Length: 233
Length: 294
Ligand SMILES: Nc1ncnc2c1ncn2[C@@H]1O[C@H](COP(=O)(O)OP(=O)(O)OP(=O)(O)O)[C@@H](O)[C@H]1O
Ligand SMILES: [Mg+2]
Image 1 (cartoon, rainbow over the protein chains, first blue to last red):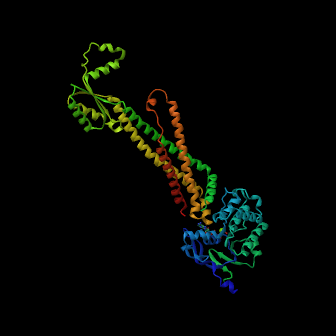
Image 2: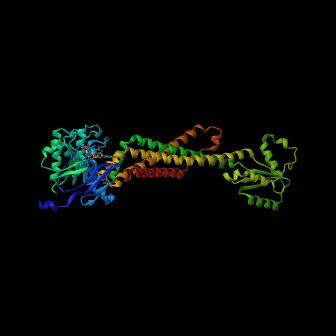
Image 3: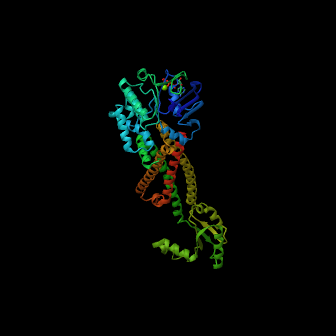
């Protein structure tokens, strides 16, 4: 569609290389661009470099070579204050969750909203909604460290989605979930996507890939992009 | 950064890490207590030295009663040598009267003596300061060279000992005081650093969700400030209790009665409090900067 191709990319990789010291090549010459409002699946076998790619987008890791643009800003030349604002617009659900075990589910999910000074009422309503959607309401005041892995995974997703982020990155979001819970998670993504969020889901969950067989995918193998059927191409 | 957000975050931090918080608090309290205790001893010794000095005088025995003109000359000579509180000339008759007073009911033994058989003398009261007391030896040697002086008398032994003692105490105090300030600063800043390190995951998440520098640092800073206020306050309070206990238990006769303990003056207490608070806050800033590398 013409209107879509004329839209600027929200995420763009230009010949990005990532080498973990001393010499682990995680990504090699990766170039792609993603437009605002798309939902992309990032696939590839274990160790292919999916997590690395997502971490580069949220600037948790930095590229060894190449350029990364997010929301029109080149990440290596961004000021700390701009980086901070940018990060508030990216929700990331980490593969290892990164929940704070000593805080309750509620407190964990509230963190990104507190950082942006969301009023308490709004925080409460949003968390109640998310917990209800993800079937976690009864764990609201349980410490995150006491949850099962599947519950932690959903809590991490709720935290990533809390602020209606323009960009949502989900690393293996259904890895620990049964089919029913996995569908709940996908429902959350669909909702956010319809509301305008750009979503990248790293996964090798065959069930999801079957449900969304028509979706756009990026596939990497040993750090190289081997398939790109995003609308751009 | 909203104040309420800082407060909420700080309370949450304190609840999360109360173990190491108590450790830091104890460290601060103990350091302040030890240091201020040493300081209290030092101050009291200094006061004691001055009070003992009240009773110190040098007696210069003369071979004859000096004339008024000679007296004035002697006065100016003494004053040009060192700082003196008071110089009093006593004639032979004064000395006789004084001896009589001292003998009290036995004064009849003096009845057969010539009221001028005692030599006239000068009473010299040195200035009551530690430094002039420690130089009393030189002073006595000088007085012996005055015209007509036969003998100079004073409580040589214990004055000298007091002088050496206070000098020694002063040296020990300066050394241990310096050592204490150093160790206290080091301990406080490393305890705070431990807290910050143990909170790395939390700080990392905060950074990743786009929390501003001040949002992350303000609660930690407030925490350092609280540690400083509570720790030094507790330390001084403990010192006060200790002081009261000492006063109660050594209130009997003897050395302590003589010393009459005094507590730290308010200005000194204030200085100790504010320096500790400053150290804690700086300690937390330094360790936050070091561990966060934002
Ligand atoms: N911090 C690191 N230091 C060194 N090597 C790393 C680091 N993180 C990842 N790697 C390596 O980089 C490569 C890509 O890792 P990555 O985590 O991106 O894979 P992945 O596609 O997410 O795998 P999985 O599906 O198992 O999560 C792997 O070979 C991995 O061992
Ligand atoms: Mg991964």
